[in-house]
Structures are given as structure tokens and as C-alpha cells.
Image 1 (cartoon, rainbow, N blue to C red):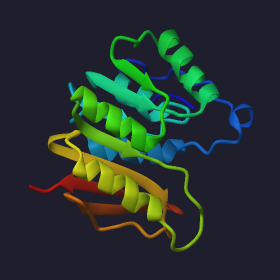
Image 2 (spheres, rainbow, N blue to C red):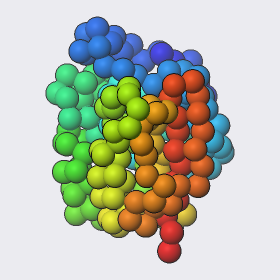
Image 3 (cartoon, rainbow, N blue to C red):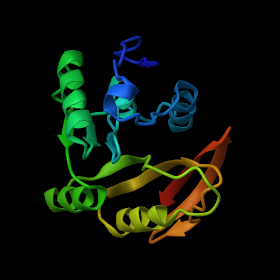
Length: 191
């Protein structure tokens, strides 16, 4: 996988799925679609990737000018990989790493007073119709927290046939886009 644009354009992220428990990573075309949706609004933004896995989404955000990128990955080996890659790319001054479960990470970030302009969620999901309780829970936690800056957006990557809420706490879905069997739901905070 490669970084698509920005200061790190063309850099390879040497993530080997087999070495990391066959973790499913975001496909390049879907990553392109995600950053096309986000547009040129990344310069100076604060970006949270709550389920970082390989770190590729956070690295792309850093490459495109975000002033702060927080990546959370609870798996020890994947977290260590993201740390090494952050060091190799020389972006340690804008990247902060956490190794917590998602709910605990939200609590910790809330405690520190951090706010974000963009929150990206790609939790592990089952590829079957229905399901989706984890989306209600995590979106509710984010929507009820003070983590979101004014005008912030939350983007959720999910299996297209999963049930995903239209509203969660103060989050309202403003767009839903389908890319093969995967979808991106875009939320904005109301009020």
C-alpha cells in the first residue's frame, strides 16, 4: 500500500497482512474515495483514526497536511508497526499513538481535552446482513463526547449490508456512499 498524495506521496507502508493476523485493510480505491470526500479541507485539521490497523489512513491524513493525527490501535504488534513507520516517515511531531480499546480511547482523549475535525472509524465488522450494534455504541460514545470540534465530521467504513444508524446522539448521517461491498457513512454533529 502506498500514500496517494501530499508530502509523503508514493511512500510505501510495508504492512504484511499475514504477519498481522490477516488484518483486513482499507483498499487503495476506497482510501482514494475517502480522501476525495474529505477534499482539500485537511490542511491544519485534527484527525482521529480510532481503529488504525496498518495506520495507512492516518499516514495519508498526515501527508495531506493535518496538524494532528491521533491513531489508536489496541493490538501490540500493529501498534509497534505504526510507531516504527511513523519514525521512518519522520512525522512523529504530528502523530500521537494510543493502544487502547476504542471506548477507553474516547474516555482518555476526552480527559485530555483534545478535539477533532475529522474522526475515521473502521471497526472490525462481520460481512453479513444486519448486525451493526457496534456502530450504535461507538457513534453514540463519540456523539455524546466533547471530542468533536465545530463543523466536525465522522466517517464510518462498514460492510454495505450492515445496519448502520442514521442518527446517534448528536450525530446525523449526511451522506452514504457505496463502493462494491463496502460503504462510507458520513456524519455531522447537530447543534
